[in-house]
Structures are given as C-alpha cells and as structure tokens.
Image (tube, rainbow, N blue to C red):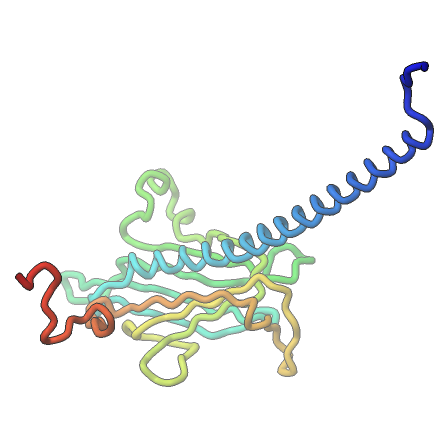
Length: 241
C-alpha cells in the first residue's frame, strides 16, 4: 500500500479556516485588552495632570503660609471669556526700620485667555516677586523686567475656582486678609457647557479638587477609641503569671 505524503485540498482548507478562526479570536481579544488598557491609561493621565497642577499650588501655600500675621491671602473672583478664572495671591510682608509694611514675597496664580486665537480654553499662569530670588541660580543673571513676569504653567483649563473656608457652612469665593481656616482649589480640563446664566461650567464628576489647611497651629483631635482601646480590667497577654 502506497504511503500518503500530502494533505488533500479539503484538509488544507479546513486547516486554514480553523487557523483563521483562531487568529480572529486572538486579534479580537488583543483589541479588547488594548482598548481597556488605553482607557485605563487615559483615565490615569487625566487624573494625574490636574493633581500635579494642584500639587504645585499646594506647595506654594505650604512654603508661604506661616503663623506670621504678615502673611495674607487675596482672592479676586472674576470671569474671563465666560470662564471661571479667579486671581489667587499669597503675599508676605515685613516691617522695615521705619515700621512700614514692605513686600517680602508674593506669588500670584491666575488664569487668562489662551493666546492662540482658535483655542477656547484658559492658560494658568504663575508669577513670583520678592526681595530674595526664588531660584538663586537661574535668577542671578536676569534683568529686573525678566523677574516679575507671569510664567505659563499649563493650558486647556476650562474651570478654575478657589474656595475659602472660614468656619461657615458655605465657603467664600473672594477673600482679602489674613489666613482663613483652609482653601480648596478646584480645576478641570474637561469639555465645558454653557449654563443658563451664560457662563461655562463642567460636570461635577470631572472636577478635581484639593483642600489645604492653613492654620498650622491648630489642635488636631485624635480618636483613639475602638478596638485598640484596652478595657479597664484587661490584663495584657503574658502578664497574667
């Protein structure tokens, strides 16, 4: 009997069909995994970006805010191109020999219109002014007019709000004076919509916020009750002998 050495046409076609089905299944699964991974990565990136901006503002607050009564906060509530865009300033003063108030340091955060004509968003700027350079290495060779300028931090902002906590039920959106109890910074890069009042807003679940407590001398109450608290008559393990 002659030994078979090749596949028939039907067997080749069957193998090709089965291989194609396996390949389609693998590619479909790969596509779903890639789509899920892209969605997760996009969500992480969308979350990371605003929190990095809020972290920069929080670092300025932590650096500038002290128990010194000469530290003041200025928040001006305003809108730019129907966007919420307040001015947020942290100012530290000192008394000169003649007992007059002089500026020691001032940091200003504010949003303004995107300089690109077709861009329908805001740019967040930061400026620093003080008798001591913020960066002694980079600011050493700068001219005076180069020091007190607004530096763009990021663009694409569609909502920016500063809330002041004073102990009242509702936070305030404008402030001039000493240190309040805390400040909440809210930012968003999501697609805005027009409200009935005629200004832009974004969905609440697309806003990112961070609250910073400003009173560093406050007393923090710790709750030590619960499972870690020992009963009055309880004898510690190993001490009952």
